[in-house]
Image 1 (cartoon, rainbow, N blue to C red):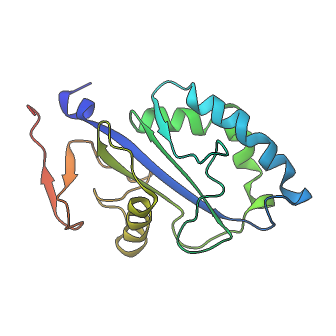
Image 2 (image 1 turned 90 degrees about the vertical axis):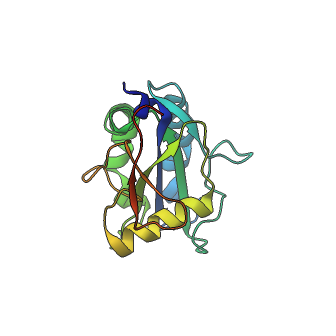
Length: 170
């Protein structure tokens, strides 16, 4: 791992619009799986942090002003660590069932971006990154697993369109 990579961690946000209320019988399997899947994430190699309220998850944290949207935010060592968690075990099983529980949205529902090591993003920051991705497509400011950008690229604060190289000796 380079000094630059160690100086940054990967933040991710994903949102989903519920098809039913969280306390409905239709979402019972999803809700019952939250704690075990979160525990798996917490113990995964490369996991750093995840957004949670007093409930232990983030399903009651508002996002984008839509009461039917739920948010998941976390920070990982890198894209490899995030991908390894996403596509194996119980999380993979739940991904296969997502259409049972969530509406299919046409716009981007997941965004990734690099944050300085130790930074824990707020929901407002995640909303901004997701909206930027929707408006501009993948850039160093907000990208996807299909179009990632290296940790050695950073975006100057206040100008999401301007990419600057980060010194590798920092």
